[in-house]
Length: 326
Image 1 (cartoon, one colour):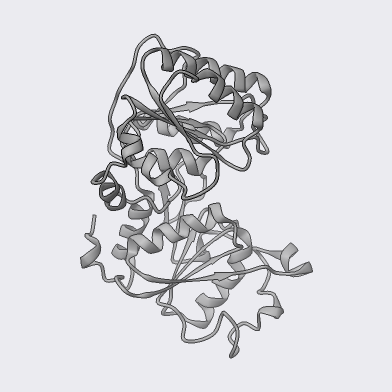
Image 2: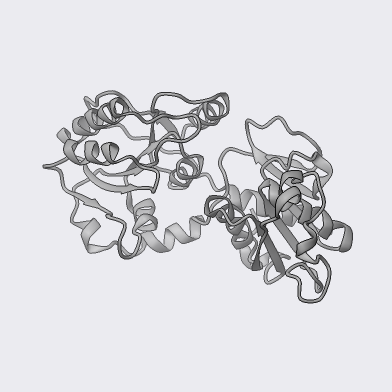
């Protein structure tokens, strides 16, 4: 892996092109950060027929692409990083207008391998090509350097917890996972058994988390030492990634699971009812790698294991470095 200070991409201008969804934007931001590039965000929101035609159609004329005053106008960036179908028309147009710009797509653009100079897709994706690479997790901004800096300073409230410190990262229902009250009850029973073995807890929920899931977690750990983020003040999530001894993550979030796997610490995945072939392949790949295990119904003893932390942003940045202006 190239050390960041030695990268040819250090300080280069990069555009991050997305539709503004936070979960997607963080992926390309992680790659830009790993490159050491000076990144600027370009958010697209095509209207009407132009939105319907993406990713195959042209840029929405309302963008005034290439004209003075447009967010897409010279000077063109050294590197353009895009993700999401709405970003693809702009990326293709940049590639045509500025052949010197190195173009990268995170996730399958659905328009073929010829869409960009480099395409990074999940390991279970079927897209192939000489310019296509596969990663086990989605890229993110929690680099090994960032986690090392966080580990160098242990916050007093976390230091006061007993070990193992279990970070519980809750998602919620999505298109394939239902997350019914019965699922929350199963999750609570498992965490209660962990609490009986002396674990402490760092609990955080997302906007999608149903109230019964959060309540089940709290009801299962009333006597355990714990910190619960209530959604106000500074989000402690990054500190919990750095200082958690093990993780319990709900299967519905590919991003949160991948971020936990940057720790190199044990990650248990709780699976609500449902799922899909895509999610099953993702979670199976992480289990085969040795990063995750399925959360048991009940713990009778504490387990531990280790693996090389997963950092897909660095992997993608290394590949850009290797290929760029080769």
